[in-house]
Length: 584
Image (cartoon, rainbow, N blue to C red):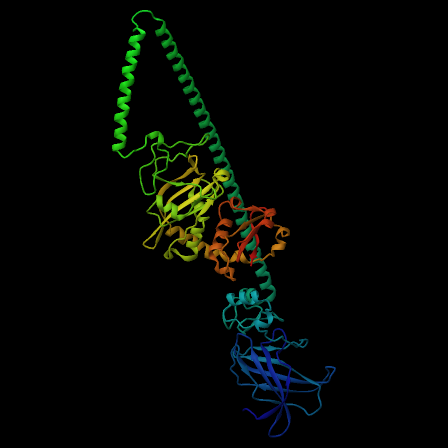
């Protein structure tokens, strides 16, 4: 029967000796309300698998040196306490009167429901078990705490293994022999890995090492792919040079043979003429010859007059030899004569359709190629993009993905139209450079590439050049979707490590990639046009095609009122960090 009492002070909790089926859960020194006598209210917890029917509990009264001065025992009988069950806390044990420094609780004997008895060894040492530590207190590393939450949903306490016991994260107290927690059923090893500070630290380190290994393997794979791409590009370039040299040699040989044949024909004609002049018989007299020559001349003049009248009647159309002007925009008839500049030939257009875009120098001597010009020659187009470029290979896709127009599609989506951009070149100085012209059509919310040319301007006459645009029909929707998904998954990695511009040259960088002059928003993560441009160059098959030597970084420029982002790369073209230049 429960007794009324008032608490004087707490006693040491969690007292235990290895092998005991009971743990002293808590204890209090109390004063009984009826008699005023001192007593101990002790709560005991069954940690054995078998139900407990009876238990003998002893309270030892000690001095400051730990010497027992007095004590009291009590037998708890008629019990039926299963594992995890508690008893004794509401029935205090009367204690002898005296001024005692401290108290110790032991369990001399326990009787189980099947009649078996556990007796405490005489040399048993009773100690105090550590309390359960909340995970938030034990795991001070936020990453470790987050990982523990992932591994052990609902976990509350850190793992511990005092004496012959182990503490589960759910609050269950288990014996060392228990493979799983009696309370929640979790495996001990799994709990130890997910709720032990030391093991979690080791687990995180192992996972980090694995990520580094995978990243290193991926970097090595990318370097190998880049090297293979460079070798293939070098082989293709060598093959092109060899083919060009062979073609040039063939043309030179054909020209030589043609010149020899022409010279031989002239010599033959001269010899025949000389022979005819020396033959005495059958020739007309000089007078007769002059008469025939006069008649022939009159006939020629009459024919010329008739032809002149015909020209006037037809509106003065020029002869083929005079038809040197490029066609008027919108007219599909091509010039009848298309002379090439010395030592230059128009590129082979194969069997595909093409449209020529003609350009003339302006007052400043530069040729402007912009959407307005391109639309005059390709009326089906919506806009175009023109810029100088490096040699990115034979496939048009790298040139497309490297353009501002495609980057704007990634930023704005395919439902918002397509942007164009023009540029100018100086034919006196830059006509031999490599340029990229992309022609787009946007209709029914679908962006399409309908023409492209990569190469140098082709001379037409002394002040006219043209670009033979290869016509095509390429729906960009799927490519935009693939690139947008991949970019969204990987763009955060671009901005993980900031490096101040003044530290760029000394951070170990050997190369750098530069973005567009589009930066206005102070939050650079929102400039997806520039970020995609950098991301696609870094993740291309060969970043070396876009990279610049770090020694050139000091001369990098930014448009007024803009900022530009740069990616800094090591010697293997792997990302070190990023920096930003501002031009306020």
